[in-house]
Structure formats: structure tokens, C-alpha cells
Image 1 (tube, rainbow, N blue to C red):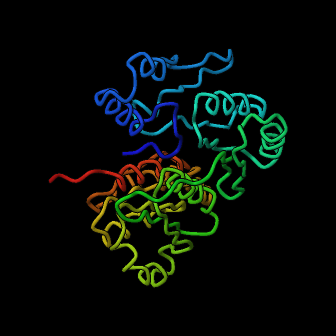
Image 2: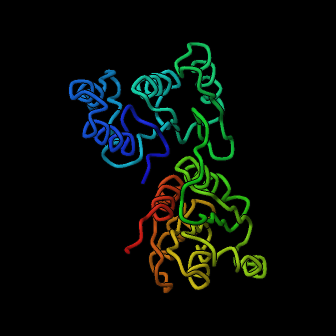
Length: 270
């Protein structure tokens, strides 16, 4: 799978191309060694950005913004961009912190001319352009209610930044199941579906019975007292009777979108 979230100094496809060029005598061995010989991480004191993660795993490092200051996020972005990464996302960044991040990233030219934007719904700071779509099909991100949008958008933006085409199906909870059933054809075309729901978490099980692809259930902390901050939805999803349904942690839209995009890019046996 090509590295989509970030183009590293040497990502997987580039590494293959480089090795072919060496084999063909088009690139000197010493030049190739210099290109791949960078340190595997940079020590910033407060963080050690993993600048070679894209080479190892196919997807470059993503910044978890909660608990970090805007200046720390900007410093990590600068390290990744300086190492050659052309796309960086920072998740869980609230609006106030995002404004400060954007000011730092744009004023100090940390981003080497790359565009810097903020998705308010997803709470994600985005550095660089979205990649071209290169998945096998589509990733459907469905959420039960408008209150779940924060988590659904985190999943959707993550999958898009990994090169997947995302179709959003929002406010299709089981309380009005006819809304969900009207999207049957969309679910049939999906490579993977992310089902985001709080309350009793029933959406994932219903979608699992409509799809021929893996369903990634993502419980949210939305709900009244007895939902225990998403624990009820989590347990319901873990106990789903729909085959092919897996579960991520409460409010982990990033993890759900990431997993869905990996599935969308998976190679099939020949």
C-alpha cells in the first residue's frame, strides 16, 4: 500500500523505485545510502517524531493533539515536514488550540509552503493536500445521530487522508431504521464500513447484516446516564451477533478510519 497520510523522505514506493534505480545503474550506491541513512527519529526533548514510520508501516506518523500545546504540535509538524513528509494530521485539537497552531505553522513557515487547514467537525489540523484516491472501493462512514458527528468526521477525514474515497451516511440511527435501509446499495459497494453510534450502539449490528464487507464499530460517549460515557455502546458492539464486525475504543474515530482505509487498500490473493 502506498504511503498516503505522509510522503516520507523515502516512503515504500519511493524506496522500491530507488532500489530499482540502483540495480539499473541509474543511481550511485553512496547516493542511495545517503537518501535512506537519515536517523529513524528526531529528538525534540518533549517528543521523538518517528520520521521513518512510513517506510516501515506504509503510513506516516499522526500527531495526537490532546494534551499537547500548540507550540509542541507545531514543533512536531516541523520535524516531520523537515524529514520529507508532505502530509501531516494532528487529531483531537480543539478550536482554540487549532487557531494558535495555524498561526504558528503559517507565520514561521514551518510547513515549507504546504497548505494548513482545520476541520472543525473532525477536530483535525491538516497540513498538505489530500492525496489522490487509490483504494479498492469506497469507505462508508455511517453515524447514528448528529451528536455523533465529531467522531464520524474524525474517521472520515482520517480515511480520506490515507487515500480512500469516503461516503458519509449520517443520522441513520435505528430509531428511524427506514433512513438506514435507503442506503442499501451504498453499503453493498463498500470495501469497509465504519459504524459510529452512542446510546445502545445497535447501529453496528444492523449494518453488519446489510454488508458483504468488514464493519468497524465505533462507540461514542453520547448518551444518557446509563450509557456510562459510551460503555453501554461498547459492550453492545462487542456482543454483536453480526459476523465480520470488529470494535475500536470509545470515541476512537481515528482508529476506525485508519483501519477502514487499510482494509480498503488491502491486496487480494491472486
